[in-house]
Image (cartoon, rainbow, N blue to C red; front, top):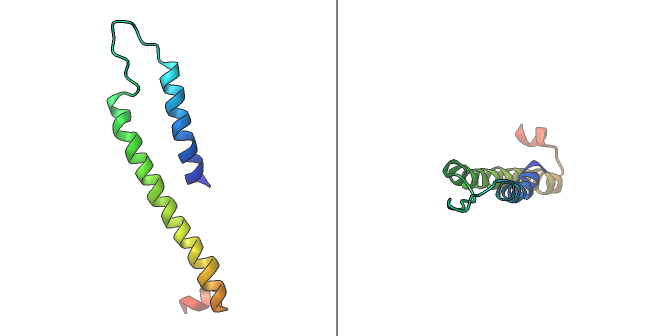
Length: 77
């Protein structure tokens, strides 16, 4: 749920950042600053990696362990 929450609110954050910054006529209009350009893609990659790990763990516990007819503790033994 946390991964989905973050993936939904990253675009919301970007939208709020772009609409909250005042840009003067003589300055270039930059959507993000250079640290944000570095952090945002890394954050997205991190969220996808952690989310895929959680989905695989849920698949293991829900599908494999339940269909084998034993608990995770019995399987570890």
